[in-house]
Image 1 (cartoon, rainbow, N blue to C red):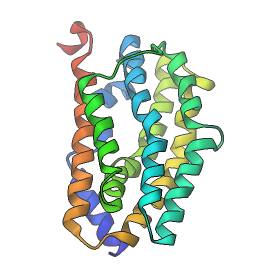
Image 2: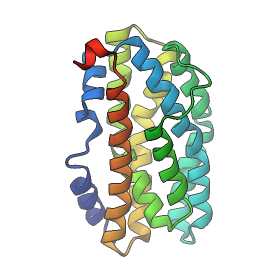
Image 3: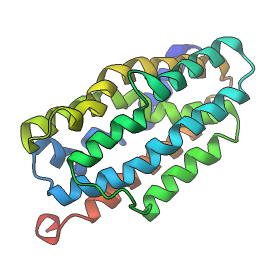
Length: 219
């Protein structure tokens, strides 16, 4: 499938699911999140970040095409150690905002993690489409989060490093994932369905965070 065709499908799927348009991220940018909301978000996002290397590794093992496999392996290698393990970098953010180290996954978080765990065992095309639905947005989202943390919440240094790294790296990661997807995909509906499922799960994840806002903010 042509890269331009994959790009067009992702634009279509994400038209009403661009995560930076979600009210939770808009409040993050505006500086109106309560600190407990940042802590709650970090405690939940950690579950996704923790499972991502395994998801990528399972996708790599399922790909026969050497070009596509190399692209996804490069993404995994970065996740595991460039410039440090990304879960380790994430803990700097979690600590800075006071996230619990033992936060149990909420229903939407559990559903998000289950989706990625499930698609990793399906066809590589479905898995890559689900990854692409987030990765093509991730660089812009990370930059917005880092800027908001510094300007609105006084979080700096290790507290923003995870997002600073991803604001640059995820632009490359997104390109790698989409290129791998284009290399393997032959069925536009499979790409569309994989991306749409992930986009809906991410939107539900943020809906749940928004619903958990303190009552005074939710009104």
